[in-house]
Image (cartoon, rainbow, N blue to C red):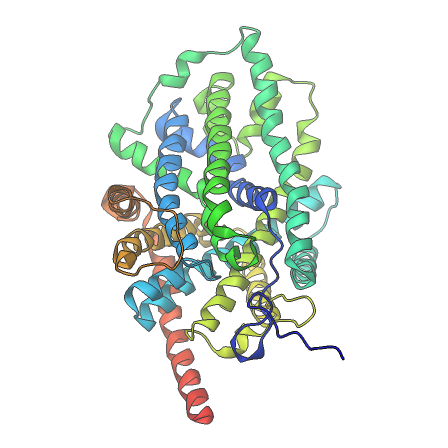
Amino acid sequence: MSQTRPPSPTEETGGGEPSLKQVMGPGLLLLFIIGDILGTGIYALTGEIAGEVGGAAWLPFAIAFTVALITACSYLELVTKYPQAAGAALYVHKAFGKHLLTFLVCFAVMCSGITSASAASRAFAANLATGFGLDVGNGVILLIALAFMLLILAVNLRGVGESVKINVLLTAVELSGLLIVILISLFFILGGNADFSRVVAFETASDKSVFMAVSTATSLAFFAMVGFEDSVNMAEETKNPARIFPRMMFTGLGITGLIYVLVSICAVAVVPVGQLSDSETPLATVVQTAAPGFPIADLLPFISMFAVANSALINMLMASRLLYGMSKQGVLPSFLAKVHPGRRTPQAAIVFTTVIALGLITFVSLSPDSPVVSLLGGTTSLLLLAVFALVNVSVLVLRRERAATRHFSAGRVLPVVGAITCLYLVLPWSSGRPAGQYKIAGVLLALGLILWVVTWYARKKEDARVG
């Protein structure tokens, strides 16, 4: 007579819901981290950063990398101590236990992910039209973007294993674009045609000191470094996270930081700073200068298309796992914790975040030239840096809780340094950010407050019904 085996802890959670499927090993986690950090930011930001600080465009990237590395240590201590989905929102919830603060952190991180994915979908559609030479209007671009987001939905529902394998392919393509820039530039440099004196030349606007110019440029460069924090939302789908997360996080940050610094050095050595900062496609300008016969104009739209597709996929993975994790913690309505019994993916959270993304894509596409759209990237960086400051403080608060197993330790000094540097890049008088970013962040947080009231009321009714 056969015995029915009770579900293991990795297969079922409280309330009879199956848990998420653990499919990510060291290799897939590393590529997830690299793919999330390497996005379209580096393809567009190099010129703007050179416009702020001149030829020393590599310095803001190096500083942004250092700030990211310090904050990553805090994330590593917390993800190895609490290997659950939800990331920053979970850590802040455990540290402070304030429902409103937790909800706002959750909402800020979710907004950053969904907004980034929505903008990426629009960019994917535009690059597809450019790459294939399609002369189509805004309406067709919108339909392509919406169809692309529905494809992301299907991949996400299919399973994290399939999603991460597609991430591997897309990461390889976007990485190849940056390697093309580096290799062709090195060939040009070794030929004696580059001007390395520009690499150490500071050129700032007349109304800015060198210190403020570097701060502003670092705030811009940090947008290209964010993404490493998304991986902690995949903790429940990672095999043995306490062991593999530290190695893969440091390796991923190291690889991407090195690539960014090399790209920025090559760019200013090959192309004069003024020409670089005036270009909307600075890396294409670098390749065209170093190798005029290289068909970068035809190739770049497709590379960019793969890069933004990867950004959209990873951000939607992150956003859905964030909502799922916080629903399990009781911060969000319980229906968002529903898991597909066969695929073991957070189906309710996936559908919910996709609906929001479809709405955002439509809104953005109705006014594609709006200055609000151009500020969303900076607003994303602003919101995440504020969250990072809270995460660094949460590490110190949660030291009073002893973990059942051994975990990574960020030490006593790094979380303090991380909190201070993140706040420095958030505050308007030190970061040099435009006022528009704070206005958008304020509107988003006000919307978050409204949604918190709705969530609190729904949870109260749900508890009363159960009771």
